[in-house]
Length: 308
Image (tube, rainbow, N blue to C red):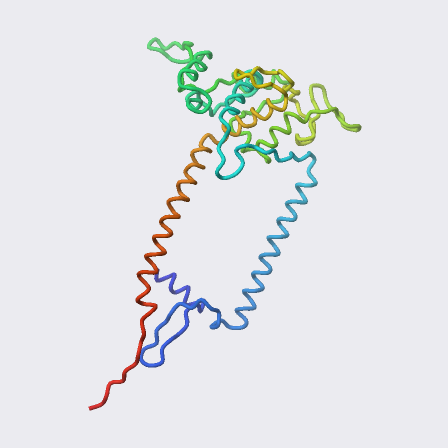
């Protein structure tokens, strides 16, 4: 506290008051006590700082515009905004798309079956999903490893035992884990949607190697993953028409949830915090007015002491 007061005094934010008796230092909100050179120096610093910030922003935008890939358009996601929650029906459908299409190549190593409970599935449904996979466990009392049905505490299994096996099955390309893919890619779910629906024939002058496909939203344009989402490429349990765009939208929403499973809880906490702090701010403001009203309305008078 003393150091903070010292810095304030050194910056001349405090000025002297008092005519009779000892001088009292009070906090000044004006800059009348500042010298002309200090005002000029601070103004110059502000202008230079603002100019440097604007220059860095412009350079970042120009570099992004000159990138070698197309930029994804922003889609009207239902969970956009600070107070919007995820569409859990879409998240469930996205899990079904992952299970039927994406699971063959991509893993979700940070998502456990227990994370699906009360989000996309009931507890019994999540247990049934876990029981469909076989998990290698052990060692037992005799030191042997064994296989057992999955449990809620198990994580979604990887389609490949290791990275080398994954590369060997995909012409040397390594399919990335999708647990955090939305947070790891610029554009988030907009990028995922654009990538899944943006396959096209390579333009003139673009040479693709064997096993590569052209996608303008992928850096460089040449991507090893073939187009996997077509109409009726997956089947929804709720009867939703499985068009290619619907499949891409649902799996992008599901992957957004995978990247931020706490998204709904955090936004609900934001609403609660705003309500609580609004009430506290009103109480603090009233208490401040009540406490300082006597000090601000008092009248000071100087009465010299008469000499006897």
